Length: 456
Image 1 (cartoon, rainbow, N blue to C red):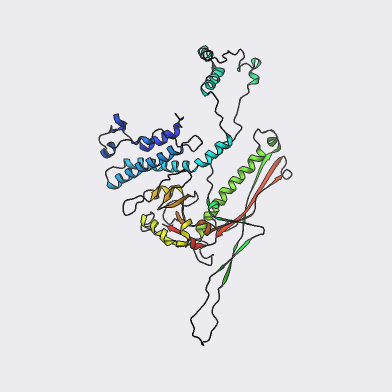
Image 2: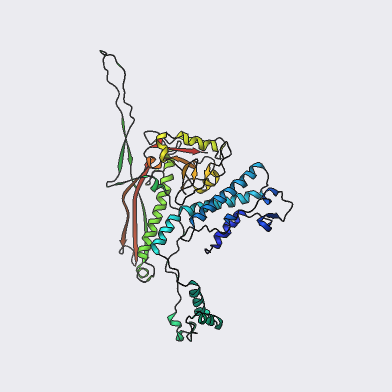
């Protein structure tokens, strides 16, 4: 049986847990607080497909089990939400609905990461001992062994010799057993935007980039055989500049630390800076104002700071019917607002908080608009279109633009100049070694017609 991740199992169990209930035979739910009117839920059996399923996104995860858990959780989510709509339950259901929603988000992300984890496992290989049971027993014995453990080792025809030397006594071998520490660095997760991967990326060799646009306003007319042919209008061109901004970091470390540290600080520190640069440029690709940084895609939305910058106009918006909320009709109409030529590569762009709200929406026939993935590596969908999780998109709220729909590769242009560069400076700030890192990157909308926005 696969070893379970207890934290993940507890999270999945929370999805189905109501306060004041205990499990009765045959996995039926029995309320221990009769004052709560939740008989409909009490009569429903616990979906056992979720029990015992790990949601870890590492190489030990079972893709089929994770997808099964995702779809089972979504069925429970739909049932719970339907009960809430029908008014059969009280506020108690909100806690369950929120827990299921969070688990759906975690499972969706775990499935998306499964392919990367499998590749990492192939690269690193398996490090499991040949005889895991004996290895554990021998290790336990060598640390704090007893005569009973020694006899077990002998019974298995293993080497079971009690050590005369002691780690607690330096002269008896303790000096050979120094305290071990983790030579890797556990890093706090930084949410990196996928917008670069979804956009068009242009490398340049000059200080800037200029893109030409034409209005295609070419005049023509019908004439008779001998009628005069007056001059017709010709297209007009407009130049739109894309100027890269510069992001920098100037981190320092002492020479002694670089010499003596078990961690390769000279490699680790620039790598950390590069990750931070990726996070900062992702933020700018969404909401940048163009001041020494890229113009964000949201700045081109109608009413945005760069709405008048593009010669073709701003990214069109569709407003919702009720302020501060997302409704199914507005999401459906957003798809039809986009021209057919951009539909084949169109995707929804939102953050996970918005995704939790979208998951509640239904069409006129009572079918949920959001659907989970059925294959590892494939994203969840909204009305048949893929969903891209962009952590820097705004949350649902009055006046916000939490949802974009369109072909981002046709919409947004990322400009790279040189790329990530590191200058090692041992002279300016002795005895410290400075790592002066820079990256020049710009961005902006190249085709506002390929994207539509939902504004609350």
